[in-house]
Image: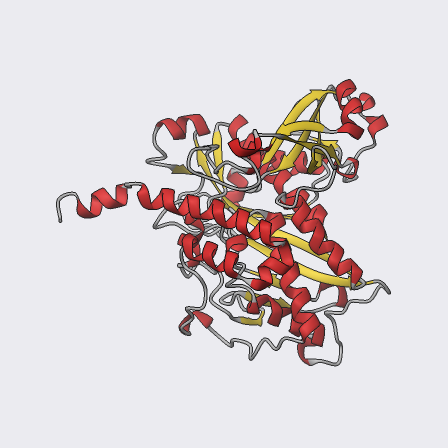
Length: 451
């Protein structure tokens, strides 16, 4: 198995359709599908797409959200998706189809769109490369799987959900055996699509599962992450089920995480995060990287917790990060250090949930680490034992507060450009205001007869 296929291989693989896909602000795929002959024609020129995809909210509502990048004041102009042939692969979960991820570029100048998630991550990778460093990452992604298609669940108002496990099943083999016909199809399909699987398991929450992909360079990991989500959701639907990557689908259920693992390799082939002479083999660069990560977590919370629902998980004790804490192999902290062999020494950012955009979350981690290493930031003492027994209130706990911190942050503006921080803050504030205006079941259950 290889990650990608060559353009010349398309016909021989029986592929008649190619999907050219960009990634939107919410980590979702958008784009167009076409015959192979059309794909060959657009490789250089790109595919025209309306800028609305970077200017509407998660429901594609254009009403209240106002951003400088696009809108009536720009005439809803186009940009182009330029196929990145290093990502061309079979989409084995779709018949006769290949998929090619694309970079979003300006219609006229061909310059990368600054607000596009793939552009934002590429920029952080470039900055580390200028320092002689290459980041390698992995994202551990959990999700909930329910019986019933998305259409059926939507018509039922997402009430009375029927989870695919009815008892806590973390690490348990038997529940996995019961669902193995489906998950074997998932693993095989991912492998055939150049998305290599590391391990899979049943999880603690009812109907909760986890599949880990093999680590890769940071951009490849984010690309695999969004393709993985698309494949799982499509395969679940075709098997009469629905997969959700909400951070916390139910009030009394378990949150779903997206832990981000990061290691570093330098231009000489060394591993700066490893020091065989240091305690637990933690080097000074790794210690400073942790310091930078924690120093900027509050300002970059919007990239780690991008939805109202994100905060439901973070405000729990579901191993969801805990303030500005770090520790050795400690799952009650926000930053967990995993030490061992030189290439495996890494940090794990535990704050993001399954709803995170992997490009943005990874960019936030890399920018923070780079700053910490440059400034020699001290992370303080590690947490020992249960970090949840300590009181930590350093992080924003609403989407509105996270948006304000992000837009005011001098560090975020320097790391991602001021127009980018303004854009994403505006999107988040619109979502927060929409939530505040909405009357929910919680309101009625709590106040209808009692107030």
